[in-house]
Amino acid sequence: MIEASRASGGRIAQYSIHDTEEYLSRIGYSPQDLNKLNVLHVTGTKGKGSTCAFVDSLLRHSMPEWTVAVRERIRINGTPISEEDFAKYFFQVWDRLEKNDTRKYESTPPKPMYFRMVTLVAFHAFVELKVDATILEVGVGGMYDCTNIIPRPVVTGISALGIDHVSVLGKTLKEIAWQKGGIYKEGVPAFTVNQPEDGLEVLERQARERKASKFVIVPLTPGLSDIKLGLSGFHQYQNANLAISLAQEFLHIKAPLVAPTTLSAAFVSGLENTRWPGRCQTVPDPSLKGTTWFLDGAHTVESLECCVQWFFSPAVGLWEKVHKPVRIFIFNCTHGRSGSSFLLTVLSKMKAQLQLHGKGDIDPNHFFDHVIFCSNVTYADGGFKGDLTNRVVAEEKVDLLKVQQELADAWASLVLNYPKDHIHVYPSLEHAVRFVRKLNSENSGKEVTETSTQEATAVDVLVTGSLHLVGGIIEVAGLSEVAL
Image (cartoon, rainbow, N blue to C red; front, side, top):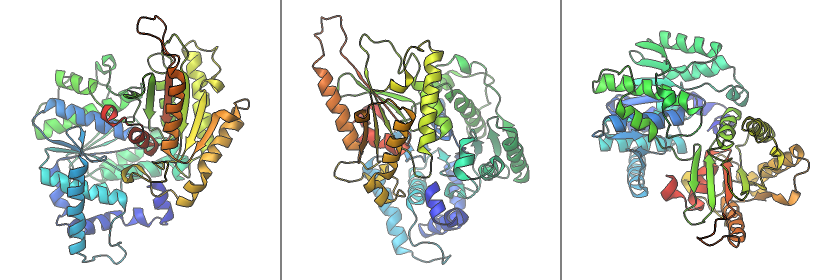
């Protein structure tokens, strides 16, 4: 989405709301019709997806009779919409666009781009299903994002403003905060986590100028630190804290329930049972005994640091085993981002974590036995599963594996003595999964009988750097039933 906006010369951002209003009208809705969806609108540069997942779980556990919808890839009551239902709603929207081609703005394309189309399908599905609550995650930015078409959400929230996005987007923190604060609305409560001072000042000004009913920097929730969250990683406590405030405010307005001063039993259960595929997720392979996938779609320097902090902990990637596991690192990143700096972040944080947990004798440069850099192309024949692939990636660069080769070269330059034949560049996710299966097959010969006290050699696979990468691995490796 960021790359698409750049390629358009800024047009996508500039005309996003106008275009979305036109498409919405052509399929039979007005922006005011969307108010009935009871929207919780969330943005931020990191943690917004996890925050939405926590809010979803909190509302479902508090009000089990409600229908709760999440726009991120369209989920209803915690479950992804079926391919059949998605196809039904998609073609209903498509047919309406086809039949009503009246154009309000000459500059608006006849059909919306991918993200905007999915958002329209979500809106249509949620209206048809008469949902009680809609958790709406911003795509990019806030002010001009197509999700910002909602005239009056019930509550709005902003997760952490990542410093990494300042360099990636070429904007100052104040400019980013101004964009994010664009989701604040007149008469609507405005929440945020604590932010760097420059960003916080802008958010407070945005809330005031947009006449939000109140502006709240969420306080720490008593007792939260004693709960084992359903999403792993220490950084998730900040996201959970924001989610608690958003859910309490929403319930107070819509139920109505008096916001509790302590965590209710329903909230505790909601926090413990939150699930969000591809975020600090441990998935034992259902078909490959001994293989475990560690999945995190981290795609910024800061989120990668959180990923490494999660994986390099005794409860996850450092847990004690009789035999040292074969460890594999699968990585890819989006065009426009510095792969070398990302990999340096991983290696540096890895070293710090090993020392923190008393594993300083382990060489961080050789912790992984193999590293794989592959494109987000789904299958070995070059085919894509459409909802898993970022089509913005220039196809000629995918074919040439330019980015993946640059990542491999960067790894070789950062880890000078790393075996060259253990650095792999593959053209598809299926190639990467085949390699893992091959290693698993080779290690299966070491498996022992059930009565033996020895443990078979395990294969641990850390997959990170891109949500598209993680989503594709879940599909190709056959992890959907246990991961989603």
